[in-house]
Length: 81
Image 1 (tube, one colour):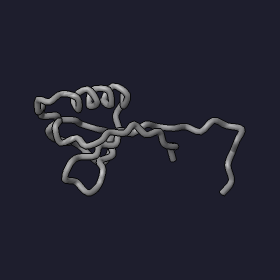
Image 2 (cartoon, one colour):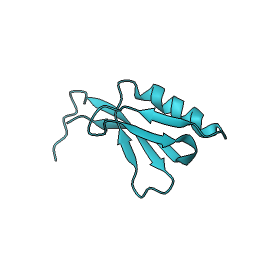
Image 3 (tube, helix red, strand yellow):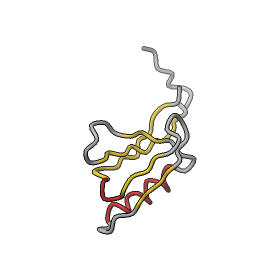
Image 4 (cartoon, helix red, strand yellow):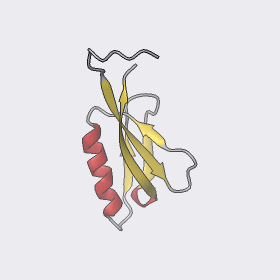
């Protein structure tokens, strides 16, 4: 595999959501992934269950879950293809 060190590579960020009871993580793309990550991180700290509904960009059109079901949250940067 050849890498081009001269030109900067375009990247995008994804919010990866791990839910309790789910075997696989949910990968979501947003226009402002940092804001969504910060919002979900804040909801994780709250002991009160909150119904969360998100409309990401990409193959997942709408996702709904309860905030207390969030096991982990990741903000990942990946190269664009």
